Image (cartoon, rainbow, N blue to C red):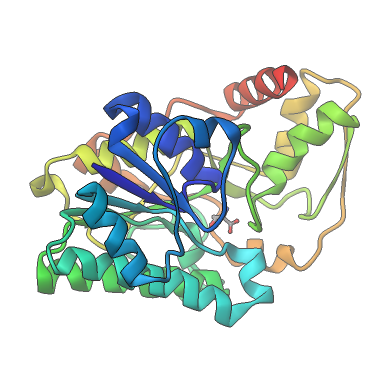
Length: 311
Ligand code: VAH
């Protein structure tokens, strides 16, 4: 069965629901440092678990006979700038715990998320390559770059089957994101419906790679179900679908809510966003495991507004 660490987070919540639909609730153990939404807690086994505590994870793995772990617990880019050592500790020690469980053959497969945050200010910004200059300038990006190196090391040295994608900014309606620089792209839909006005913390022309959550979950499960021999990347796959700026997402919302107005007041997160690519080259993911996104900006906006209206 499968254990999800960080199951109550923005990705973890939807990953848990999708995996439970696919494999049956009893085979998917959700865990987090705190309890999650009503629907998540009611839909299958849950354990309160600190992802930095090796023994606690090992107990859960043995008790439920876990063979795959999705490590979705992390501190994201904006919050990590406020608490660098706590971010490094959580992001790295949780990864070592899961990689070491796999090295000890207590689990057989690991998913670990990386991010476009591994790229830095001197990385080529357009159509950023799978293997290129990367000097991340954020604590979060440094932890993701180091994490990728460790994943590849454990794969080569100990034959650990760890798989990873560099997520772009993710847009979802089921769970609010926590502490990311791309969170504006979720908040803007809520504010458009609630107030018809949104003050964006990034400048209007800040173009970033983004993805609708449904595509991100599909990519994650596709990668985990691919035959190991097809995978040529064991650090982390670039993963792309669309790129847009705050101005462009505003215009897409105005097609549905004509009077919606956004203002742009950049804060400390502008510098983080400026260090990231505008778009990525994900041809390796398309070649190795047939990656193909379904959602673009218009269909994402339609989905988000329809579902948020319903809440
Ligand atoms: C963040 N949503 O903003 C995350 C993600 C690429 C962005 O890593 O930190």
